[in-house]
Amino acid sequence: MSPDPRHGEVAEPEVPVGLKAKVRQIGPGIMAAATGVGAGDLVATMVAGSRYGYALLWAVIVGTIFKIALGEAVGRWHLTSGRTMLSGWRTLGRWVLVYFGAYAVVWGFVYGATAMSASGLPLNALFPAIDVRYWAMICGVAGFVLVWFGRYAVIEKVMTILVGVMFVAVVGTAILVTPNLVETFEGFVPRLPDGSFVYVLGLIGGVGGTITMAAYGYWTLAKGWRSSGWLSMMRLDNTTGYVTTAIFVVAMLIVGAELLAGHNVIDGDEGLLMLGNTLAADYGQWARIPFLVGFWAVSFSSLVGVWNGVSLLFADWWRTWRLPRYTVGEAEELSDYDHRAGVGSPVFRGYVAWLTFPPMALLFLDQPFQLTVAYGALGALFMPFLAGTLLFLLNSNRVDRVGRSGWLSNTLLTVCLGLFGYLAVDKLIGLF
Image 1: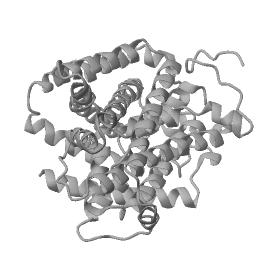
Image 2: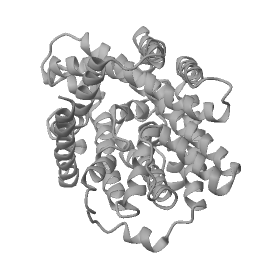
Image 3: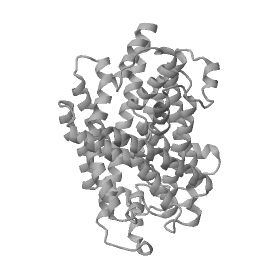
Image 4: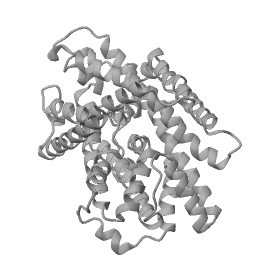
């Protein structure tokens, strides 16, 4: 097939036939998995395991099902509507773009510092001669260079390697601590130990659920998937990504249950350093080093995924913001998305720079209170916003009939809307 200059950096390939051919095409789902699970998610899961043992494993599985449903809905919208996620939101009115633009600017500034710091912590533990903030800056610049110059295919390969390192380190640590298989299987039976409700909500709604879920469709476009013929491939890819996420999370819960039961685990990314020290005390330094390398892979893969994926979202936000008023039936301009133009645009590169350099100031300062409140408030609303808009768009005439949601997708998206809505209200109450 000849290249189409209006679209991504590759022409649409032939849809693969057979499982083996489809497995070779897997990639965007791995990007989503690696980006969505950061060091903070692993710490939260580890804390849940240290307090409640294996009892909350079932919540990980429920959360995985919800993330698969959301990711599938995002991918289905891109493949069957002929429009991007931002283009779909634009049909709901400019207020949506006002919210997303404000969220992306505030979120990017705070998250940039958080991601760099999380990547610098394990490197500082391995090489303490360099201060953690300078390791953080090095990681930020490395992600900046990779995303600025790297094509999607290169970034996907780097992310796949990082996921491999994460898998070996996190799952290997879970095997090392010798999980109790009987209690593991019992953990898949739903139950709520006293005081565990907030942790259940966190495991179901928090792990892997961020703004990066909306970036999944842009990665499928970069891969060359642009029609409804890719639906089955997308579903396999998306499921593979979030099953991978579930394996990471289950492994960390096992580690928390076996190695840190009864310990007062440090909250935040420093909790993973505590785990590294515990591994060294129990098994020797050889166990600490690969775990810290895995900790870095978890953090840096999230950084790279955000630097690329959210910058794509922001560049498309600017494209759709500049479009004139239109009616839903006259929105052909919304489908005119060019991935190559997106990654080469000043807006894309400007947002990559925004994620990298201004947040370095926060590495030397505490986060301002007002900024922290704005970050928390805007972020709390994003997941119910994503679930609600997908529920509306995929049941409207904005998408071809083949792309509309059936009863299963509608049920799962409705439950996601309720769950994330509850979490948003709880977060906002906590903030204000």
